[in-house]
Length: 165
Image (cartoon, rainbow, N blue to C red; front, side):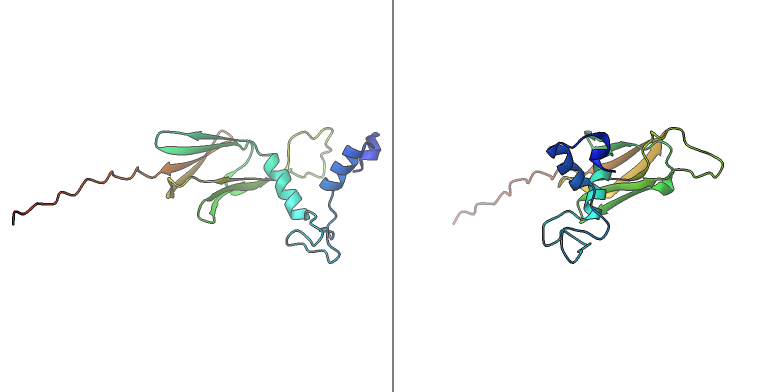
């Protein structure tokens, strides 16, 4: 889609359109480096897609006395459509995809619900227990709970017996 189609030819709109529409083979470099930023420093299609997915997935993060809770609205999704992972030992990743049901005899008059991939990444604090992570999806709301590690025991002073010489 082109910004000129709607009469939005301001330099700002043209620049935004250029940033959002990265063609499949063009990654900002002449060689079409698809894995990362090209030699020209341009964004790859994957980066733009992931940035859009993260921006479109709002989340609430709560600190409770014994845990951290990450709450994300996921209406209409089943457990097979949602993936919860821990990357690099401390990065919680919530991702998935909402697919539109396709029917040959149906014609959409309006499509307002968001479809496609979604993703959020959260860096977990040092006191998060990586072995005690649970995820529950109830009534279209995903709650990922990460328990906290118990606080370290304060060290007791060591008493040394004094001998009389």
